[in-house]
Length: 437
Image (cartoon, rainbow, N blue to C red; front, side, top):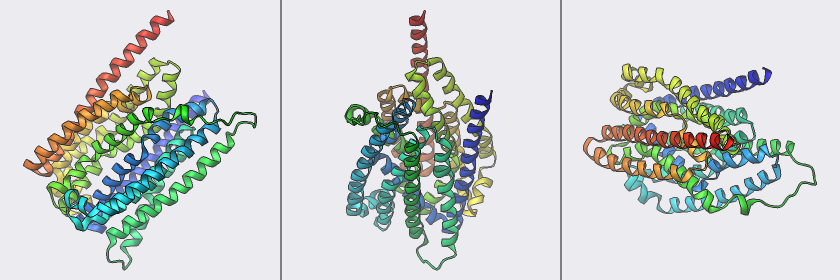
């Protein structure tokens, strides 16, 4: 009974941290909109979209792979192998991060001319490359902490401290005499990411030290066996496509509109993606559980856990869905009077996110049960479909077309993944029962 209560309290504590983090993220969105205006919101939108996309590109899928790999190593009490995996991963991040920084500083202006509203915004893409390298290190250590049963610590740093410090820094910046406040804020953002990355590294080091095996334990490297390109490529491509998939509206918005409309649209988009933050909490909780249950052949529990993620996410988003559909203009008015113009964009995207929340963590489950190649194929198919729709609808209807393409593409991808996840799990359950009889 105490064990059940302990698990329940841990779950409630994790969600409390995340909800408080959502409050500060919402406060950050409002602060960016009100203090930096529609243009500043547009600049921040382009910056965050590109650094999120680039961070997944330089990660080579290691953070996603770490959830499955480290949770099993931790269960088997192998801290030495975990440390080797961390060192191996950091070399990857720094090497590919440096390459991306060099490329973006060399060609950032040219790329901005095509994809970021003009060469004057080249500095945004250059800073996003720097932020990407730092952010993926923070994200990686956060996944390590989650995989060694330190979910609450990871949530505290990733979900609460990051937006909190950004809100505080933006408030201080607004009262300063700095002329170019949007660019200064981006620099501050990178600095905060660097500090939190160092803190996460120290916490991981401390936790692994407490798990250290006795000196008789073998120290031979497991990297050649457990970390190889063939295993990582599906995770890497799925990670890039997943972020590309979610960031596509913000990446295409500057192509078909100006920086001010991009800023308005980004505020509507951030309201919609609140469910993505809920899914991130669930991923930290259920990702390791999916991996362990599959490893232990507990297929029925896998199926039940998938349904639970759908119930939780749907329960969290449904009240917001009705609010967004009934009071879209009033909600966006919180960001400022100019932002009310995005009311219909908010309603369109809310419909797609409703289906996204109702399907649960289907993509994560496929990755955790060694069906990452299938998930990759589904992501490629869905991404191609969404790109085609955004190019056509964006050209015809500007940001309204982008919102429609995003809602349709998001619903399509998750419904198809749900179909395959259910089919695979039912087959595994039937086969396991047959062999156990």
